[in-house]
Image (tube, rainbow, N blue to C red; front, side, top):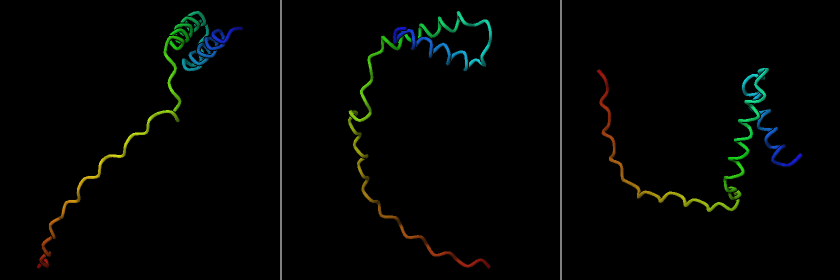
Length: 76
């Protein structure tokens, strides 16, 4: 069994499970799985997470002086 066939089988099984394991839907599941595997094969592989450029931390905003609060008047 080729690697592609194994991948299709995995997809079909996942689809079958996700739909609640219905009976009589094998042909539809296999077709959906075949299309998924085909699309996956055409998609260029993504770079590994470790090779991703790191994002720069956001620039710090200058501190803004806050106005002092007025003292509260006693209730009464």
